[in-house]
Amino acid sequence: MEIIQARRLKQLPPYLFAQIDRMKQEVKAQGADIIDLGIGDPDQPTPEHIIEKLRQAGGNGENHRYPSYEGMAAFREAVAQWYGKRFNVALDPRDEVVSLIGSKEGIAHIPLAFVNPGERVLVPSPGYPVYKTSTLFAGGIQEIMPLTRENGFLPDFSKIPEKALSEARLMFLNYPNNPTSAVAEPAFFEEAVAMAKTSNIIICHDCAYSEIAFDGYRPVSFLEVSGARDVCIEFHSLSKTYNMTGWRIGFAVGNRDIVAGLGKIKTNIDSGIFQAVQWAGVAALQGDQQCVERMRKIYQERRDVLAAGLKSAGLDFDLPRATFYLWVCVPRGYNASEFTMHLLQKAGIVTTPGSGFGEEGEGYIRMALTVDKERMQEAVERIKKVGF
Image 1 (cartoon, rainbow, N blue to C red):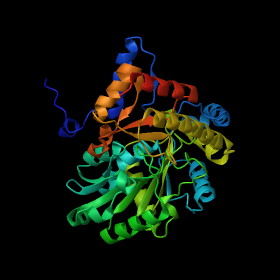
Image 2: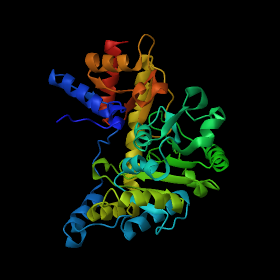
Image 3: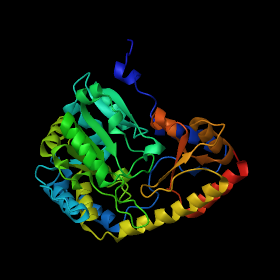
């Protein structure tokens, strides 16, 4: 029997982070001491009060059965309360909040609810790879929105072709941004709302990094802008905020009809999040947020160490106000992949080539602040030693 894969799989590039992990393992097998600044996976443990809640809830037999598809009422209420306190945005937990098995899952499924084969989706480049793959799986056509340093890594809506605007069903936005670390202010979101209303486009805003910010800066929610609720669904995750990447819990909020569309897809694809994990999510959202403040301070210390070291080594970048990434210009004489391999093979440092986030990411590498500051300093010394 000949096993033939669907055409959609043949159109997929190799998943970027799986490739990086393979290369890392190859170098590690040669005995190298690896400093991993590649994948954005927090190295700090999940706060103890969240873990303790999981222990308690995991022992309760009521949590061992199928959970509700849209998420436990208690979890959705905790999300709504958190949004109210954090962003001053009022949400109805009954129909403006849906739980997700991590925000990646929701982003991967949203085009299935609103994009027909052949319809367009506006996708930022560089950008989180799942924006492109989710469009592909729905049979949609990507319309790339270039993010350039000259424009603060914000899309220029005036440069989107009229035909693309008229045919687009969704637009993905992500601020604070992965991989560029750029941030967006309310005026940009207001412009996006006006464009979306004129062109009848749903905005899918990925807000997973809103709680990792520095120097007193506080990122805004898209939903804080007037009229946003008419056009927007916002994706959020507990992964980065509470060091819960392995727990797989997130949520989407916003326009009730958009939330309902995503919820309908989910009821036919998955069976929800283990309730004990949802109770842990309640503890995270409703508990003392000093753990988040401590996390921010740790990342800011690391940012400052790495930034100072890279500047002294002669590398160019914009100091990030949010996220735990540095988006670093590749030095002359290299492309992104070549510089990534140079750092890995010569210095034992794992980074991510910007080209893996889209063609417009060529010329950059991404460095994650997910090792302690002593290892950050060691990475800097290695870069200076091997040169470029």
